[in-house]
Picture (cartoon, rainbow, N blue to C red):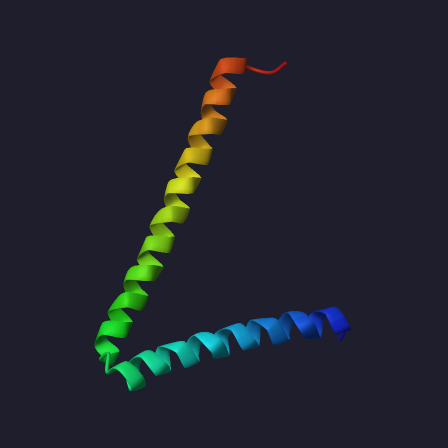
Length: 74
């Protein structure tokens, strides 16, 4: 395994560990119920999915309009 690959995996692991620590701190230190945290997680995932779908639709429209304006290629 190359050194760059190890750094990549280490960075991903540390990011996930930091996020888990923040969630644990919100639940434990501030008394936020787990159900509320799961609801926030689900809402965040759904919003990310909606943004990705909207970006794909906009990209499709731009490509489609560009093809309509240029006409058929020879």
